[in-house]
Length: 60
Image (cartoon, rainbow, N blue to C red):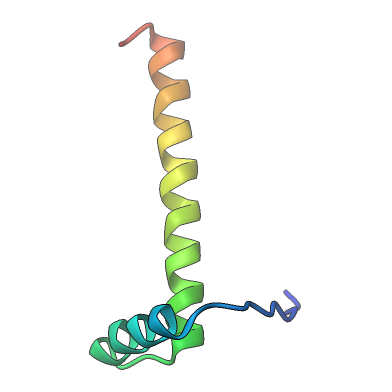
């Protein structure tokens, strides 16, 4: 899989919060943000799968 570049403009306060969160985990800000995005994407896809399964079985 190839990679691409994404450039973001964020305020200094948010960047500092990201730095602190990343540092607690021994990660770079880039790795922390990417991991967070991947996790959120998984959570969203998982929730959709659960909802579709419930509809299929008539639950809920």
